[in-house]
Amino acid sequence: MSGLRARQKADRHRRIIEAAAALFRDAGYEGAKIETIAAQAEVSVGTIYNYYQNKGDILGAIVSMEVNEVLNAGRGVVANPPANVGDALDTLLGIYIEHSLHYLSKEMWRQAMAISTQLPDSPFGQAYTALDRALTEQIRALIARLQALGLVRRDIDGPALGELIFNNMNMMFIEFVKREEARIAELRTAIRRQNRILVAAIGV
Amino acid sequence: MSGLRARQKADRHRRIIEAAAALFRDAGYEGAKIETIAAQAEVSVGTIYNYYQNKGDILGAIVSMEVNEVLNAGRGVVANPPANVGDALDTLLGIYIEHSLHYLSKEMWRQAMAISTQLPDSPFGQAYTALDRALTEQIRALIARLQALGLVRRDIDGPALGELIFNNMNMMFIEFVKREEARIAELRTAIRRQNRILVAAIGV
DNA sequence: TTCTAAAATTGAGTCAATTCTGTTTTTGTG
DNA sequence: CACAAAAACAGAATTGACTCAATTTTAGAA
Image 1 (cartoon, each protein chain N blue to C red):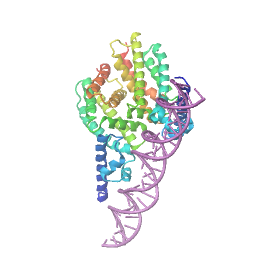
Image 2 (tube, rainbow over the protein chains, first blue to last red):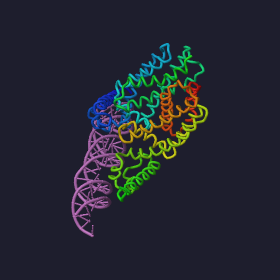
Image 3 (cartoon, helix red, strand yellow):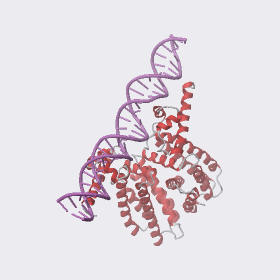
Image 4 (cartoon, chains in turn red, green, cyan, purple):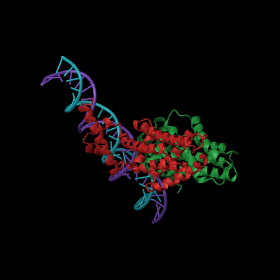
């Protein structure tokens, strides 16, 4: 199945995503009309709905790309963490946060998060939940690594701790994207302050 | 200004909220058409928009009532907390969680949360953020109380800890409402497991 | 009681997402 | 190459939230 039909399909997918990404940035998610995306991508409205269940799923495809990049960048830190618990956490979470506004605006994040809670069973809703879980797992992996290196006490409940750290960061990030004027530096400082409590508790 | 006009206003407010609450429960948030709410409340569509800026704000009014009840119930625990850090936290957060599905279905929570991130500057968005902050403050108050009672170390950063605990609970609650089959008991167990790490770290 | 300005209500109209049905394109087979 | 079935496309029609100009109701003064 790599004939003309498959090639056209891939090409249309790409054109739709590119048109949508440009328009979401330009006009905002709400401001980007499906009709306009269709025109820009040189397909009809009906075709867009043939490729994506709804407007949210188009945004979803873009968010997925972003988060997967972040997950990739995080792998390096887990493999070779700084030799200090506080720095290790700060480095990993820092990567997540610093990358977050690369391709997505705050408004796009707000929409993506909203859709994922609104329609948890839609394709995007499920994908978003899976991405959250992957991030949680990566934090857990870091903790396990730090335990293996003897930097974190062995009797700490690693999985629960990892989820706690992710949940806190995620909630702080949600509040961050809700306030247009909030700065990344403040966000990182606030998270560091909270994690300090944990770091003191789990260090050897 | 407590003449006929004011009484009719209050009455229409009540009728709209009652009609909406019933329909949201029955047909779900999306399934409840403004037209139907209007008919049930015996007002016109235009009037509803005279009272509420948008559909989300109607849901917002219902959510506010629920959360304010919860805040009220929490006051008792802060004033007289169990003499054990783990139990104190579990009791307060338990009240939040157990009350949460009294008037609101999971679907209504999902919608409310979605709207509050989608439109953080709408009346409801701001009200929701204020409610979150109020809950955070109540947890902080509990911690301050426990510190005053000598059950929590004085050198712990209480405000940061309170926010950490709230954020974690809130995120767990979000995941809880996203999965229709999730049970309250499991949610409480999972949160208890996470808080155990903190309790061990902050006790005297 | 009567009248006028302010406040509130009404419902037809607008707008954008989504659906639906008829048409066109691609594929595989003879 | 010709053709029938399957897949994909197009864009008009539908749907439901929200707006707005015209009408009705209330308040307060004379």
